[in-house]
Length: 106
Image (cartoon, rainbow, N blue to C red; front, side, top):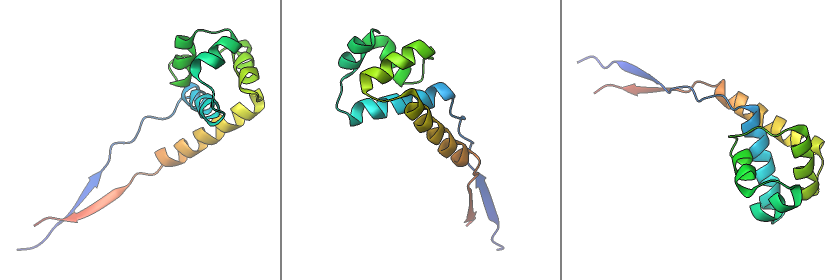
């Protein structure tokens, strides 16, 4: 019997949205600095639920809200945007690679 190679393509991942990258950057900073959602939300004058949705990339922050959250985290908007940009670049590079696996059929 002749063996045939079989190619399997994985389904491409959904591209990361800016709001998801921004939320991930905010969450990373908050966790790294040891703050709870409640502490940051209280300082930034936003509800805990809304801050949680921002961190999960479900909501978009206005520039004013982002400024307040950054102040509560002790960082700048530029730092958060740079972190989000890096996350987007990594996700974009990952999404542009289509892995191929070859398996010999028995």
